[in-house]
Amino acid sequence: MLKEDRRVRIICGHYGSGKTEFAVNYAVKLAAEGGHPMLADIDVINPYFRSRERSAELEKLGVRVAASSTSATSLDLPSISAGVYSAFDDHSTDAVIDIGGDKGGITVLNRFSDHFSSPAEYDLFFIINAYREATKNASQITDYIDIFENTCGLKVSGLINNTHMLKSTVADDIINGYRLAFKVSEKTGIPLRYNSGMSGLYEKLPEEIKSRFFPMELFMRDDWMS
Amino acid sequence: MEKMLMKGNEAVGAAAIKAGCKYFFGYPITPQNELPEYMSRELPKNGGTYLQAESEIGAINMVFGAAGAGARVMTSSSSPGIALKQEGISYLCGAELPCVIVNMSRSGPGLGGIQPAQGDYFQATRGGGNGDYYTPVYAPASIQETVDLVQEAFDVADTYRTPVIILGDGMIGQMMESVEFKDIQKRRLPQKDWALKEHVEKGSKKLINSLYIKPEEMEPHLQKIFGKYDVIKKEEVRYEKFNCEGADVVAVAYGTVSRIVRNAIKKLEEDGIKLGLIRPITLWPFPFEAFDEISPETKAFLSVEMSMGQMIDDVKIANAGRLPVEFYGRPGGIVPKPIEVVDKVKEILGGAK
Image 1 (spheres, rainbow over the protein chains, first blue to last red):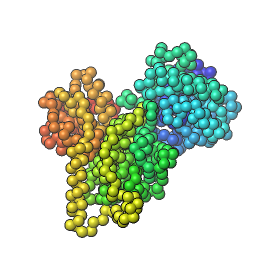
Image 2: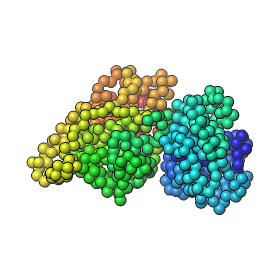
Image 3: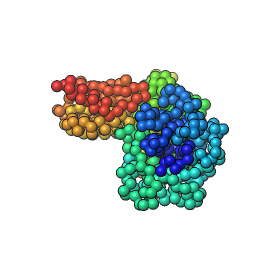
Image 4: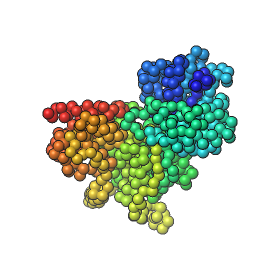
């Protein structure tokens, strides 16, 4: 399923929507499907919960990680490793680009704009969590999409319904998010690519969500977190 | 307001606005930046003013001005920034001005690092500035509790005319959790007849400062302030006691660390070991009364902190020499794992046999 997506998958959205968790899961699944994933962490917005904190674990699962050029995982310097260029330039990799939230996060993409080749090589996935204050209705989301597209020059090519309440998510939460994402999709013509959620919820979901279900595991939340 | 997923820092901002905070003065520092950012976006929409000051010192003195005028006002920062504010906090205490100060603390001393730490316990509970004073300190352990305590902090500040500190660690600021904005129980608040606003309206003169040149005036001023502290110690102590009845060891932990201890409690249960938890919600006043009753089975207290050991001093005072007081700490920005607490408890019990 993931291999049908375009080679460079860029994950964007409002901060706190679950972009990093989705990006990490996506890269791990790509590796499991026999791809050659490279996870490029170009989040210069968040000081905590960045995919680079999980580098060692991810490398073991077959995911290459490129992040900051400084060795400290916890520095808040907006420095990005030159290794990130290979996500764009090396056509043998399946790239997953985890960017920071909001406009500030997506602005970083512009640094790589001269490395963008054909638009057919890019998927810009917009993550939706209906429980985030700034993306709880369709017009807020389409405003975000407009700003993002104008900031980076790429078009959002897919919506990801990642609506959740962390570990207390129930099937209805995913269904609520699906309704919202569906509305955005109808309004914009952008296809709803995946509905993500903890794999245990799959059986409780209606068929239209099941067919595009993306099962998640939590890599970024420690076991004491809710 | 329905249930939402919020980052701790945003939730502080939303709670402050709900509590009627109209002014925010601050200066950026990681890991609390989402709070000023939220306030800069949302306060103007709610009839308030957000102003980025030229420094933390500037910000706290603007808080002095707004509080003196009679407004609900907040500032926030993280450890080194809070250190810079200490002069202003001392002045606010001396002038008896209410405000809420948020510290999403990181490691130190000095610039330290940006990861969560609890090394500001002494600074918050002992009065980090000069002179004789304390400030009520709330230490939330979840984003929901943060939302509730921030709202209450404004009422406590107004009730006692004192700055109130919300001490989260960086994890509380950065973590996402679901929150609900419930109406908190309203207190009957005193009239702000001391505030400049009232005097300007009446055309009378009023000077608010912390200068008392004559010792025979300064002494009663301090006695008056400490009289309020006695009331605060009686009325405002807050803590949670969990699983302590018949516990082999009782852990004492606040904020993020208390969550980790709860996880350790579950893990230890599987091995037939009972770990209790005393979770101070107010760090000052410290919940000494929570230590009054100790089960005869309990062999030790264990202070777990993201520091080299600061709250342990209060635990020792509370314990009053009855039991051994052990310590487990991860300073410098490391968040301990539940298994580390499990191992420490087993070590304590092994040693006791």
